[in-house]
Length: 113
Image (cartoon, rainbow, N blue to C red; front, side, top):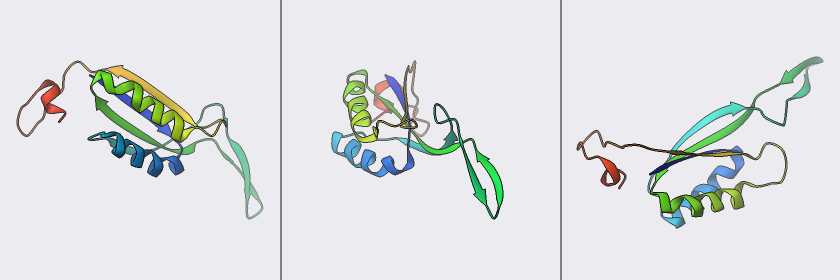
């Protein structure tokens, strides 16, 4: 089992969710986050006062899936979320040792379904 964490632009989330539903992704956790990378930040002016924006709003989508599902999901995230500009986001993949469903005490792959 693998955990996929995708940090994406907020406007890309609804189209991504639609495509992941069509692919059959059963569950995900979604968080509103903020961050910066190559974008660095920008300066703005509000009522004559300069201010600096260093963190941009992002959406973090987390999924735990069977290993064979990783490549198709990554392809969809890349296809939907790419604008070819700094700030498109990142995808992190990590191994999951074990999963437990709290309600039934199932473990392993059966706890995912």
